[in-house]
Length: 481
Image (cartoon, rainbow, N blue to C red; front, side, top):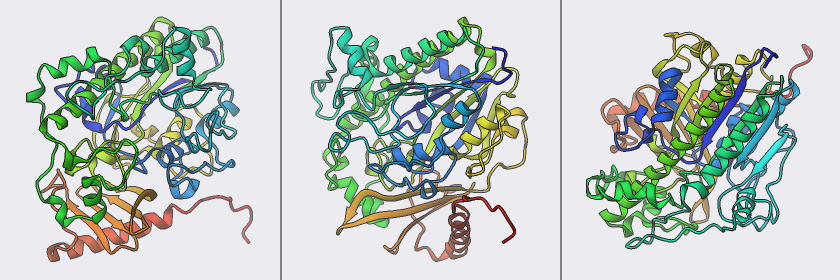
């Protein structure tokens, strides 16, 4: 490549919590390729999404703007046509842009999208779309790929559990298909001088938890040793009502997993299946990295590995996701590598938001950051090991996320500092306050504790500031008055 601009391989998983990789301290999973990427690149230990559900989070990090700014605040909404995606901005600067797997910047439900996902002017020249493995759309390219092989998607439940499924064998899995399309793109573009951008959006480890049986069997052999979820009986009594409703499974969501109806075997099986899916992800990341190496592009390619949000996985008596802001829900893995340009190492104190990724990539490519972006470029912290803090706090929101009580949706906002976390449920007089130094597992809600009144007031003021400063910077000012 002679353009002077780096290629960009962005690997985005779905619903993967931060503690699911060996490099983040998980001794159960088998993730040598991602662990190696972390050793050669930069691993951020405290990276956070801007919403704990898919569409608002994805709209945020693909634009570098907050959910309330993009106006895409909940699943089922369509991203407005005037939003500028990082792929569009890179395409305008001469990049060849491609995608495989999920996008989910617009409503993805057969009732409104009978053929495919609605798209805006997103800049993708190649668009290998598969929202999820099930064949609800004729344009699901993963389904077409299976059909070419004479197969269809099947995910039967394993014996003894109604909650865990086994998916296709690894060679037929959607995660494998996503990586295969990325590999083809990488290998083909090695023959051209134009820089490229490819985002590989795997659906895993999103529910339903359906790893290949061979990957799950490794964990089943030690099932009784798998740790149970972090949950204390009765801990939800002092927490917002939405969590107690979720614990009982009363929301009635499709695929919802009611913690209260499960036994220890169920909990361990679900965790085993989730980890097994992560193992398959790592294997496919290895394929993509090997394609970069064999095609001679590894040294001129920025590789990003991250996820759109986390997964409760039984912690605090809940599964999946919702208007909940525990670390397992909003903290995600984030690894960035570019040999020779990024000074590798672990950034264990830096607070990072996923909204920061789009301006970071533009900065690294020497492209002017779009004036509508609100994220803060991480490039100074990638190109040098800077001690100053990137952010003083983290901002995250959940607005009308289909979780209702008495016909009222949960509207909630989180602010996290290095030492404390505040969550406000607007209009409900409900909230959470955690001392993360004394209670890192977030068991004890201090919202009503008089000893924390001063801390609560300070965090409320900071949250008010963050909400004010997430107002859209557009349209730009063009004159003094």
